[in-house]
Figure 1 (cartoon, rainbow, N blue to C red):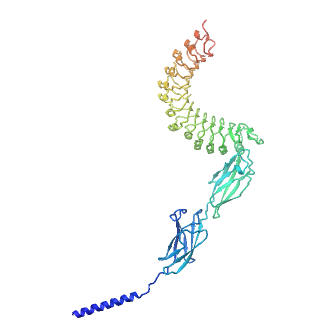
Figure 2: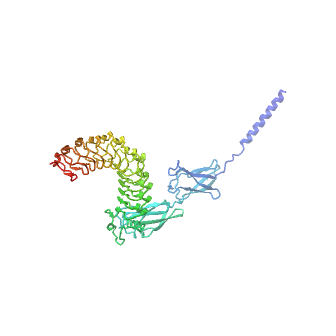
Figure 3: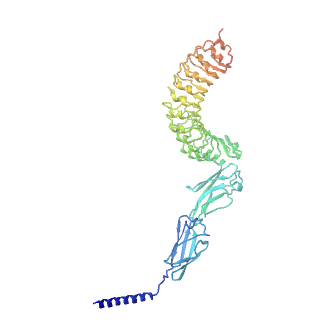
Length: 542
């Protein structure tokens, strides 16, 4: 039994040794795979490339094509190649792809294949007109002029001075990268000129370029209002000779007065880029302004009084240089929101309208120094006014005001306060906080006495209290040592204090329409008063 087992083991060992010897003698088969599978350029190996750019490989033609963004530098690009298993390639590292580059792919078994890699910039389809300029160096003009490109309407607007010869201009155009344009060189812009911008891929876009002089703009305004009485003579080439038109030294309109029966203000009004003062008052049929009014970013003074405006376009808030605005005698029922956006507005007159309140946002108008609100429809004094801490002049005439709020004391910088033509009978003690107040107008109210708080206004220069029911001028008036003028006409005063003669700065005294029979002896003649306006029946004592 033991012998059989030994024989079996011996046979198995002989078989194992025989098999091992056969495997050692078998040949090794190496791969002949040598395909270029993918080609790409990534930003890690190529800082000039954004992200990763993949190409397409054709095994049939042994070629690869990669399209890179326009502007990519082709002279030094390092590709990332994916090959068949165990294959390699050459050349390696950065290559100049200005021309095609041939790559050799070597299989594991040493056999090779060649692939030609072609890199090209993507042909852009962008055919946009980015800029249109008239350069001083290329044209007979005093300064470089930049046109406004409207890509939505594929048009360009450029306004030049009335003295410019538009029949011979050479513009400079900026177009999309890789694009070109026609026509080039000198052009006659007496009529609109069409420019064609051609993209790198051949696609095109047309732009209509319209160059106009400010003389053209004035004519357009006139012709939009056939009933106007501007009396401009179109035969006069120099518009500086036209009525109510003033020019800057370089020939641009600086001042324009259009109060001659206009009912329409066309878009052209917004194209006077150097306009500083615009008067559009007394056009009683004018009901609206164009949105282009907001383009007048150099405008400082504007008069729109005595029209029929009910609102202002939101673009009005773009008039960032505007300092003085007159809106009185219109049809505003609400305070125009656009005004709140005017950072440099100093003087605002919105009297004689139909306002019932002011928005709290008015506090943002920190530059405001003068505010006129007379003859509106306020039911109560608008608290928003008290937030205008820099206010120096406040006109609140003709508003049926019965009680002046105590918050008036918050306007510590106030110098002029006009409360005439209201229903006031007294003033709050807080008025004494207006230590810098110099002019106080209280005529045509219901005062029976001069309010005691008035005598604490030590810097007061002028006090008017005409047309009230005041029966006496208190000798306390002498505390107003800087008082220059006192108006007390049409009251119930029977006598005036002789102490007035001690007021060295009081030069003007108005007391007509009272019941004063005799002047005090001190005023016969007065020592300092130079203008004494009285009734003929008011005489000096014998």
